Amino acid sequence: MLLGVNIDHIAVLREARKIAEPDPLDALGICKRAGADQITIHLREDRRHIQDKDAQNIIELSALPVNLECAISPEMIKIACELKPHRVTLVPEKREEVTTEGGLYIQGEQVQLKEAIKSLQAHEIEVSLFIDLSLDAIRASIALGVEWIEFHTGHYANIYAMLYSNLSKTHHSIPELELCRTDLKKMLKEELCKLRLLSCEAMEQGLRVAAGHGLTMQNVKDIVEIETIEELNIGQSIVARAIYVGLEQSIHDIKTQMIR
Ligand code: PXP
Image (cartoon, rainbow, N blue to C red; front, side, top):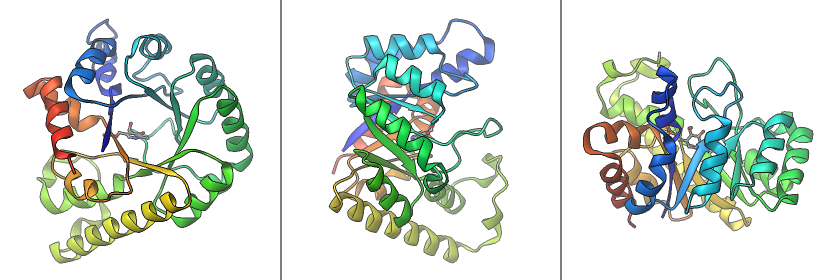
């Protein structure tokens, strides 16, 4: 199973001080040595972590393929076409969000998406759509002619966290908090089942399937068992563990969890 390491989180630390370190560029060699298959970066419209120069340098210098996540705005598509990463993953973006909270609303953005995908593919960039777990989103992705979809696993990760981790560590208000463990276990099982069925459907329809958001050393195991998912993009948990065990070890450990 392929691993894309999302190195935005290194730039988050740098931007907290607006200085030069840590430089996400320094992570490229480490990611490759540790067994990563892809570098993933998100150039946000508000440039809160990865900057234009980072994206340019990373795409130019990475020995691994680069997956650039960006919004569908004309500005971002123009930058992506100029930078020519291996893949562009189109994501929804809201300025007020802490992180990408859900998948694209494809039905509501058909025209803009069509234009964006056409431009990117004309520049020989493969395109992925970050989507929620829905059959409609898969059908719309097929109609748009993209090569990849990436399922948003945030909901799965939240349920897992409610069930198994120390809730006091999370800062989000989780409405399902009051649910008992049995209900949470059922929800988790249903979410995994949905992911399995939809991944299979997408693959049978000719799409390549990735997944990501909120995946960790602990919660990744059940996702790995879904054979129709080819790739996972993981950032926050890898960089968080890197503080204690080092980046190379952290990537190596999660990649080991991903062996089928
Ligand atoms: N995939 C996509 C499309 C994302 O937007 C993100 C978050 O930046 C990730 C994967 C990685 O999520 P996380 O940092 O929670 O592992």
